[in-house]
Every structure is written in structure tokens, then in C-alpha cells.
Amino acid sequence: MDKTLELNNKRVLLIDDQKPFQVMLKGLLLNLGAQDVQVKTTGEAGIAAYIKNPHDILLVDYNLGRGRNGRQVLEELQVRGLMKEHTLFFIITGDNTRPMVLSALELQPDDYLMKPFSHRVLRSRLVRAYKRRMWLKDVFKALTNHDYEACIEACQKHIQSNSRYSNYCRKLQIELYNKTGQLNKAETAIKELLEENSHSWVFLKLAETRLLQNSPEEALNILNHLIKRMPNAVEAYDLKTECYLQQQQLEDALESARDAITMAPFSIERQTKLAHIARDNGDFDIAKQAMNNVLQIARKSVFRNAHHLCNYLRSILDAAENSDTPQQISKYQTEATMELQRARYDEHLLHADISFEDLESILLSRIDSFNGRLREAQQRLNEVVGEKLAHNQPINKDLLPDVIAILLDVGEYEKANALAANQDENPTLDSYTSKILQARLAAAQKQQDNFFEVHKAGLDAYQQGDYIRALELFRKAMEAAPMNSGAALNFIQAAVRYVEETPGGERVRLKKECDNCFKVLEGLQLSSSHSNRYERLLEQTEGLELR
Image (cartoon, rainbow, N blue to C red):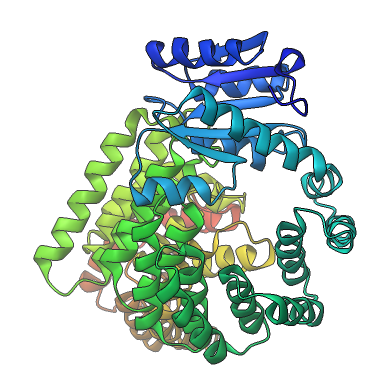
């Protein structure tokens, strides 16, 4: 071995699920002088082993069977801040397809080995990666600690000494200038480089800087020329997407985002971006598929979370609610219920603070409310969150947007608005869900305004003792919001006062209408004040033969 890397004092972790390859690679490592080689067959076991005893070298196969793959192992160590600055991480694979390679490389492992490889190739790659890691120890330490200013300074020292890794340091320094908003310094560094050479990555960083300087047209020109030279530069397509978004060219942004996804599909951030753009562009089916991709990517990753499942279900219902034909609506609703059934034993829910039964009831309630089965929707909703709504208790954040949507559909606008206002003050929703929720609120605004205008007029008429007018207005209010509990209580109360004031008045119609109002209220969890009114009105209407 090269004297710069002595494997006899290095701890090596090999993660691979194939016994023959484990034996072969371990033999190569032992021949190179390694004495401490640990083998794990799953990504989860490998992560646990690294946490217990951080290794110097990780050699991780990309495909690891049913658990986390090699990319997800690296991703988890990075996201959780577990990766030590001295550790070398190699991804190994026999799959050389473009999506696999680009998706692995964008997390920037120390190197990437294609099977099969020889004793000589393994040796040279290990030595090369180790030399860079040791030479740039101060750079990697600052970067691992997210101390970007210290990292910029460390890069500058290597640049000034004109070390063999000065180009790497220049690139990293420009990235950090852009990341920290030091755009003038980034531009100066880029101009100096352009005078010396014309590496493709320099133009990529120039485009990134121009975009951050709000010059998307100039950035696009640079990127289009760059893509001709580097057709696999997925970062260039990501930047093109951002340029088009800055210019509000949604169709072009969608096309660019889809190109990037085709090249490197295993990024939650990239798939979520596509979902946003597609939805803004009115392509709800593409948005739905992108959120499904997010769910599938997240299932085995550090980003595993119940809200990815909830978001996918919402995206399906969002597509249904924006469909043109009953056939499309039915297709999407069936897709949502089937996905929900698949999720019954989903690991996303095993450790979440949301039960499958609650999620199922809320989803079915949304389908009921959208299809006009308002009473069924209200009953399901009441079973899950009725008590919390009655007593102003917090709603589970994974159910909150769907609860608001159902309340809007059934006409409980006061409750929906109160929950939405609380969400604005204490934001817990991701941006995609917030976008869907805001669209629902905007779509219901006209009907809300009509309800509140008529309902307030009914209250005013009641206060003035004009009970006939009040009843007429409360009827109109309930046409706009058939399941609004406040309007139902107010109608019954106006009917009681009218009959008390007009003993000989017509009661047959009022009795039928009061019965319908009580059906709205039947079984609902009401606030203490509304509950007291409800009990009092039960007695009064019985005494007046209004039910």
C-alpha cells in the first residue's frame, strides 16, 4: 500500500447483502493490509454499527435488498450529522444506468466504484480519496460542522498555496459564497477563474450566481450552452427550472423539472419541486405522481414520516376535486381508498402520533363531503375530532388540513376559519399542503361571504324581534351551509320565539324544519354554550310541539 494510507490501523465497514461479493471484497481488503473489516448485510445494521463505532472507511453497495440502499445510508449519516470528517464513504454498484449513477453522485460520496473492479483499482481509489481527505482536513472539518465562514477561510489557504486541490477549494468556496449570500465575492472568484480556464463547473456556478442576482435570462443563456457540453449535468436542469420559475414561465419550468427527474429521480426535494410546479400549472395528475414518488423514496429513508403518506392522499383528492368528469373523479377517489388500504400496516404509521383508523375516517369523510354526503361526512369527522373541535383543543397536524377541508365542505365556516387562522399563527404544514389548503379556502370564500352576510342579517332581524324575517334569512343561510351547527341552533331558537309570540301561527312547516335542524345537531360534540342551548331548545320545542 501507499505509505499515505496504512489499512492495518483503519476500521473498515463493508455493507453488502451478497455473500460472494462480501467474501471477495473482504479478501481484497485483507490483501491490502486491512486487519479490522466488519461486514453488515443491511443498511440499517450498517448505520447502527457506524454509530456504535465510527469507521474510517465505508464501502457500501447501492442495492441492499429490502431495506435502505447505499444512497440512503449516506443520506441518513449526513442528515443526522453522524458522519465524521475523517470517514471515507464509497458507493459500490453493478448498475451503471444514468438515473442510478447521478442519484448516487449528487450526495457527493468520496468515490463511486463500478463492479467488477480489480485489486489495483480499489487500491488507487482508496489512496486518492484518503490523500484528498487528509490534505483538506481543515476544509472537511469546517464543512461537517456547518461552519461556512471557517470553511471559506480554509479553502482560501489552499487556493493561495496553489495546492493540488485548489480547484476543488475554489468550487466549494464559490458554492459557500452563494449559500451565504456573498454574491459579489462569488462573482469576483468566478471572473478570476474564467481568466485562467473554462471548466464547465465554473459556468455552472456563474449561472447559479446570476440567478441569485435576479438575472434569470442571463443565467438561462449560460445554462443552455453548458447543457450542450454536459448533457448529464442535472444541476444545470435544476437551475434552469429555477430560472423559469423566476420568470413565471410555468410550462418551461415544468418541462425542465421533468428532465431533471428523468436524469436523477431519487431526490425528495426534486420530486416535491415538480409537484409544486405541476399543480401551479394545473397538471394535477403529474403533481399526484410526484407526491407518490416522494412517498416511495421516503419509505426507507431518514425522511420516513406519516405526512408523506398524508400528502400523497391529499394530492389524489386534489386531482379528483379538480377533475372535469365523474369518471375521473371516481377513478381518483378509488385510488385514494386503495392507497389507504395498502397503508393499513404501513411503517409510516407505526411510530406516528396518528392512527390508521383516524386517517381512514378523515379520508372517507373528505370523499363523502365532496360527493355531497354531508351528514355522513359530518358524522365521521365528529367521531375523530368532534370533542377537540368543541373545546378548541389542538388537532393533529397530519389531519389538520383535511379537517379544515371537510369543515369548509359541510359549511362549518367559523370552525374552519378558526383552525386556519391558528395554523397561520403557528405554521406546522409543509409548503405543498399549505398550497392545497389555501386553494380550498379561496374556492370557498364566495360561499362563505354569502353565508356570513345572510346569517348576520338573520341575527340582526332576531335581535329586532322580526322573527319571520329571521327565519327566512336563517333558511337562506342553511341553504349555503346545510350542516352549520350555529345556523341550525339559531333557526330553532327563532322558530321557538316566533311560536311563542304567535300562538296561532303555522307550525307544520316549522316542525319539519326544526326536525331537520336537530338532525344536523344530533350526536355532535358541541361547545358548552351551544350544548346548553341545545338542551334548552329540546325542552322548548317539545313543549311547543315543534318536534
